Length: 81
Image (cartoon, rainbow, N blue to C red; front, side, top):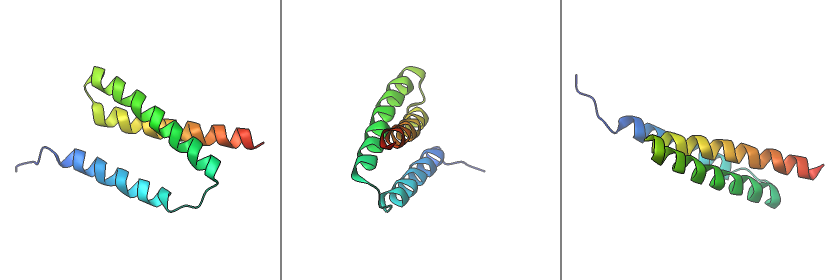
């Protein structure tokens, strides 16, 4: 049985697009969206830098984006109080 070497990366990219599209359809406050997006961008950049050093660029970038987005959302919720 032969395997397709790029299939795991394709699955990860497809899942990322599906999740991003689903979240993009949500109606959120402009500040919430901005802070979450900023957190995700900073997290993705940090994850990409770590991934370049470690050699697992894609997974580190996605993990950093998820963590940064979550951090940005939590920060926004704290600021609203």
